[in-house]
Image 1 (cartoon, rainbow, N blue to C red):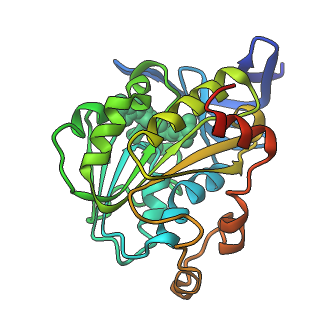
Image 2: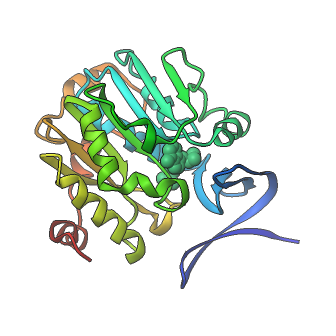
Length: 284
Ligand code: SAM
């Protein structure tokens, strides 16, 4: 009997993967977590039935949420990751000896525990002495913080359930205050392929432009995410993502990456017209 995992991307679009084995199923006060072993993408983790991370394509998302800002400001020392319970974002950050400390604020301990057990190659740096894992709500954690972090990475779920408040003006305002004078914020910004997701992305971009002087959108190809095409916001108090990029300095660091490189860095901000126009107009 064949067993397929299916995620509904829209009412008219479904994404299915053939499954070898359903390895784990658990529920926390926040969400339902499942680990499946699939033929094409290896092990994958779902939260409330939505793909979060797969062994085959996690490198794309984790490279692109970390290395863009690190190539713009290699002097980043203190980092805050909100969400990111699978550990992939922290893994990429720990490739930078210059980074002094990372706070990873993940609301759900179940995600970290499951990733430790089923995704050792992703969660391998969660116990690094430079990393503090806090099982807290990122929305509350950020309140009252002033000029603490050089970089904030919002590695969250979609704006449903515990992740909803991570796409609000209040939250972005608190992030702005928690950043140092040359602070950078990166958030995952959904896909432009389907309107219900793009609407969220356009609105999040518009809110960030209300407080950050420099906001640009970049893109990546993530096959298991809706539309296979994903966007990120680069929001910055001082640095421009291309004009201030330290290309030679980053390449001299000799950091191994599977997706990111400095040529791609320059290209990923060049958006197609249909995305560029709607982001600039701030409306679908
Ligand atoms: N890359 C994935 C994506 O784009 O869909 C996200 C991966 S990561 C697993 C997302 C994490 O955000 C989850 O572990 C979830 O528990 C966490 N999260 C959601 N809302 C949160 C909140 N308010 N504070 C802290 N963590 C939160």
